[in-house]
Length: 116
Image (cartoon, rainbow, N blue to C red; front, top):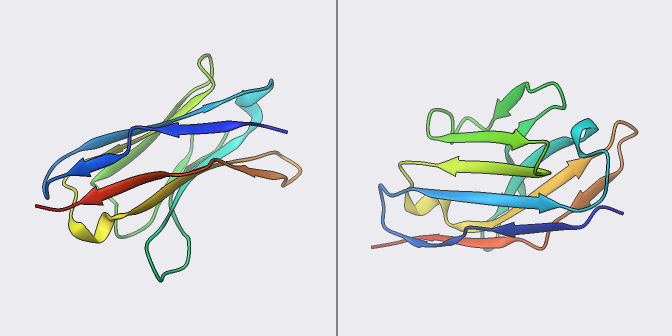
């Protein structure tokens, strides 16, 4: 099973930026689809951004133009660059890997709080 460790969360003022990282253990990282999800208090977990093993990306409408997902297969790490943050982006952010057969693994989450 893949172990995932997220980092980079924290408190940031509106309009600020954060970069989340998710490091994976195990092998064959390059074949995984990777995604970032978030869950705000009282809300369901939602997809924020995803990137295929071929590098295609997809974003939630609410973050398009502000967030960028990227991957470094050599470092077995997926990133989420978040710019122009607003209070509605406050949530616990989770990364997820998905194998070609559809098996998924989740990280433990990292808190992002946008507040003045």
